[in-house]
Image 1: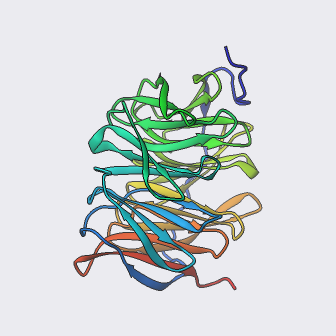
Image 2 (image 1 turned 180 degrees about the vertical axis):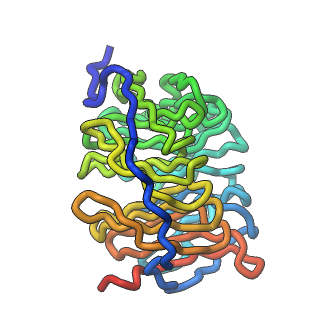
Length: 335
């Protein structure tokens, strides 16, 4: 049996919230458009994005087209549009493996891409509806949410084979790795829980039940430097800030209806939460506390990525005058 590495192991706990949820800001977000870059493929839905900082490559799931778009954030242009990714949802660049992993739900598989040649090197079958993806570097394992399959699949990055499946007892939302605690954290949306997984043993070592102020948790982002998990509740349209040391909710804030993807710029202290309703909530992080800056609205803008080196924000939009575009924005209040 592998030696456990997760530092959050322990008995089940409830993350309570008894405070008031502040009213939603009416301000417009301090963002300005730099460019609308045309994207290839059909005017159809996009999903997750993943930035590889060293190369400046942004991998964008074009779910409706079944393609993986590779965008160079430095050159500001598409460098490749990869076919063969039916109904692609989650995507994750894993520079340590020189790979990118993409969830092809239409093929019930995870597709592995070489990040240098951008060629497909493996297809790993198994998940019913693969979605969010996380990578545990010490174990060299890839963890994949199987949303409707109610499991997390564990893939060995060395062999591109399934190690095991972890039963979650509920639908899987996003899966994230926390380098601070060396744990994998999965949103179990129908149970209103976060499942904490030890990546070495590939077992659930703790369950955190969230207060109903954050209902149906789907999107998750781990701020390892400050021991926080940002959790988006789809049914409550709220963001919960979970303290990963006390395992209690530190804040609950309003966000857009039906929130999906989160992106965090740690150097600027900005959190972006994109929602299916086409609203991107922009929050400022000061002294380990979030405050609302305002809202940015764009049609069906439910996916967001940010480059911390330039503070540029990327929103793939399915249909702008009949064509897909990548909207590039910058904060208008920073220099």
